[in-house]
Length: 132
Image (cartoon, rainbow, N blue to C red; front, side, top):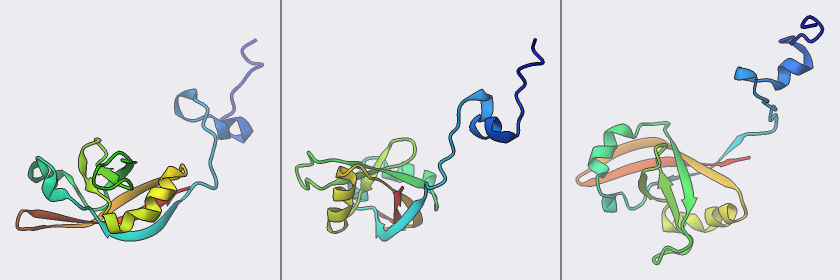
């Protein structure tokens, strides 16, 4: 009886089953669209940024989160590393369109392109992407 039901690794069934037998539906139109060059604002106000700096590397992915209750900027976008640690914000002058996109349900993220220490200031340059 077990010979009747065979799982062929090729063919249509093999396309939809990922590792561990889980269902994995391919997303052929998923892509990351580069939008803008910017930097991480407010790093001087982040406690422990000096200890965090060695763990921030070029090409690291940074996650963006809206912070509409921010008392300084209702369009604020918090930037966190992959461990969920806050490293700063999208600069206020750059966040108007990005906050609108995020409020409309779009997923934005960043990647570190360069970092350098300037006295006590950690300058982190980023590229901002839209994930579609």
